[in-house]
Image 1 (cartoon, rainbow, N blue to C red):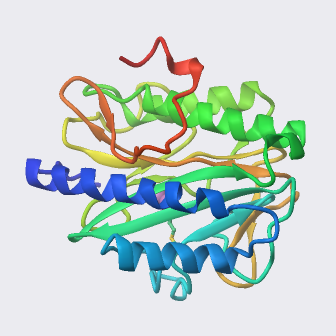
Image 2: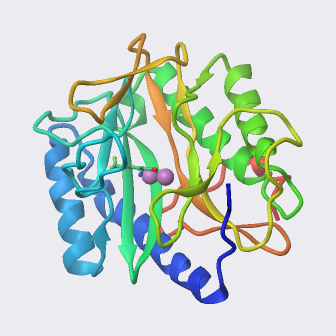
Length: 273
Ligand code: MF3
Ligand code: CO
Ligand code: CO
């Protein structure tokens, strides 16, 4: 496994791509309402990326080995869908939870980020759904708070797994965070479970995503016949949040922030500057 160290020029391009990815989520937020179809959200995001931002939607026709080309521009994963949900004609309804995962390509570099949305507002979602989304957000940030030169990849996974499991939830094993740059998915694989002091040592200039998928029930998943959509095997709810981060000389820089990014959770207040 060889993990690239980005040059200052590449880092600047990744900052721009990261902000643009996050701004797509800001743009789409007011449209995530009961009655909207995920295909409509896909079309709106596609047009915003292409026509307003001058970006390429990275998912469209993305075709890793063993897959068929991804048919849409964003991923929309509802309720028991874990990740890679393919937008379609199903309308969102009050009380659904949905992850929107955006990846833009700007000037040859990728910006990858996702958020959860509670459809119809928090008060319409079950207490379990709200707690799952909140704990998963805390897992993401507890992972981010581990990042500094000299830390190990396993420190991130350990922090995420400990928080998820201590809340009675489970960590999806089959999908992970990833290095990212001129390629959508690069080394390293960033597992969302693991042991402290294991895995590669983090060095300044590494850029990767952290994107925990946390299930309310068991960790096992299945793939739907569309060849993309991943669901929980027990059909329990699943949540995911994703940021793209840079290892800096002194710690961590989150690259996928914008005006509409939710605030960091209180749980990391004492862990980050
Ligand atoms: N954005 C996803 C990730 O975080 C990857 C989606 S691949 C797609 O890695 F083809 F489904 F879009
Ligand atoms: Co990603
Ligand atoms: Co993503």
